[in-house]
Amino acid sequence: MDKKSIYIAYTGGTIGMQRSSQGYIPIAGALAQNIAAMPEFFRAEMPDFTIHEYSPLIDSSNMCPADWQRIADDIAANYQQYDGFVILHGTDTMAFTASALSFMFENLSKPVIVTGSQIPLTELRSDGQSNLLNSLYIAANYPIPEVSLFFNNKLFRGNRTTKVHADGFEAFGSPNFDPLLDVGINIRVVAGSLLAPQNSPLTVRTITPQPIGIVTLYPGIASEVIGNMLQQPVKALILLSYGVGNAPQDEALLNQLKQAQAREIIVINLTQCLKGKVNMGGYATGNALAQAGVISGSDMTKEAALAKLHALLSQELSFDQVRQQLQLSLKGELTAG
Image 1 (tube, rainbow, N blue to C red):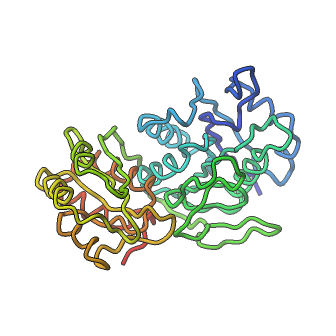
Image 2 (image 1 turned 45 degrees about the horizontal axis):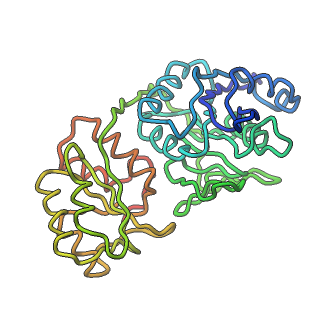
C-alpha cells in the first residue's frame, strides 16, 4: 500500500520557537531542522510529510481573519496533492482558527488537524513531539473529514474547543461535545466518523473582517457599557450572560438591546459557564432578553460564535437570514433543541 502524504502548514507558535535572551522567539527553519533530527517521525509506520513554513511566522496573538483566509487558501491550493493536513499554530488563538476554518471549508473530505504545543519542540519535556507525531499518524490512519484540534492525546472537533489551561499540557477542552478520538494505548473513536469517500470538490468561503463586540455581564454593569459596544460600525454583539442565559432586568440595558434589534445589529446570547447551554425560556431574566430580540447561542463556545458571525456576515445574507443561520448547527458547532 502506498504511504499517505500529509501537508504540514507551519504558521508559527511555541512548537517551533527557541530560547533567547528575550524569551522564546520564532526562528525560521528551526522546526524542520529539529524534526529532521528526530528519527521517530521517519519510522515505517509514519506517513510521508511536507513542511511549508510561513514567512513571516505568526505569533497566534497576532492572528486575524486575513490569516484564517491565508491558511484556508493554502490548504485549498494543496488539496489534491495530499491525503491530509496538519496546521501548526500557537495555542492562544488556536480554537478561534480551528472554528473559523470549519465554517470556511465546504465539501471537506480530508482531515485537517490543528495542533501545537505548550513547550517548544527543542526543549527536553516538550509536548510538541507527541502532539505532532500523533496528528500526523491520525491524519493518515484515522481520517476524520472535518477540521479538528489535537492536544494532549485527544482529537476534538475544532469548533467545539476552547483553551482551558494557560500553562498545562491539557490546554484545550471541549466542554459540551465528546472528543472525536481518544488516544491511549489504543486509539478509540468516540464521537468522530472515519472518512467516507466524497467526490464533491472542496470550496473555500471568503471571510472578511467584521466589526463584532463581546461583552461579559457582571453585577452592576451599566447600560452605557452595552450602549457603547453597540455603536456603529458594530454589526453583532456576543453577550456572555449568567447561567442558562440570564441578565439583569434593567430597563435601560434592555432598551439598548431593543434598539440594537431595530438597527439590525445581531445580539447573540452565550453562557459564561464552561458547560451547559442557553435556555432563555427558563427564567424571566432570560425571557426578557428574548423579548428584546436577543437570540440564543445554545452551547456554542465564544470562539465558534465569533468565527460563525464572521463567516455569515461575510456573505450576502439579510439580517433575518443571519439570525436564523446562527441558531442552526452548520458544522456541528452547537447542540440543537
